[in-house]
Length: 178
Ligand SMILES: Cc1ncc(COP(=O)(O)O)c(C=O)c1O
Image (cartoon, rainbow, N blue to C red):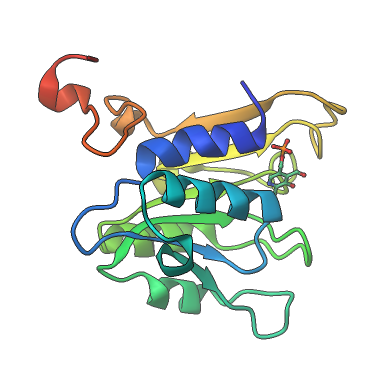
C-alpha cells in the first residue's frame, strides 16, 4: 500500500517497459482512464521514443466496450508491454483478465492491470492467473476517502527487477544494485 495510482503506474511501467529490438510498443485502449494514458505516453517519451508510434490504443466499436479477442490479436512481436484497466470506467465492462494474461504470456509479453474499478468489488486471483503487475486505489469501492493511498502488486517472479532505465540494472545479471 503506497503512493497514488498514477505514481505507482510510473514506477511499474518504468520497470516493466523495456523496449528492445522489434518489441517497442505498449498496448492500451482508447477507453482507458486519461491519466493512465498520460503516464504511458510520458514513460515512452522518457525512453526517447515517440508515443504516437509506440502507444497502440485498441479501438472500441461503440465507445463503451472492448473486444478481448481484438486486444489479444493486437499483441504481436512488436509489443513490449500490455497495460489495461480491469473494469472500463465508462461502461463498467469487466475484462477477462485471466484470458488476456494467458494470451500475453503465450506471446512472451508482460501484462499489467489498473484495477481501480474492480478492487473491492470482484475477486482478484493475481497469483493464480500469473499476472505480472497491477495498481489500484483505496478511495473507490474500498471507501478509503479522498487522499487515501493506492496499492501496487508485483508477481514474486519479478522481484529481482529494479526500476530500469535504458541500459539499466538487472540485479540477477549483475549481482549488484549499482
Ligand atoms: C482507473 C483509474 N486509474 C487512475 C486513476 C488516477 O488515480 P490518482 O489520481 O489517484 O493517481 C483513477 C482515478 O480516479 C482511476 O479511476
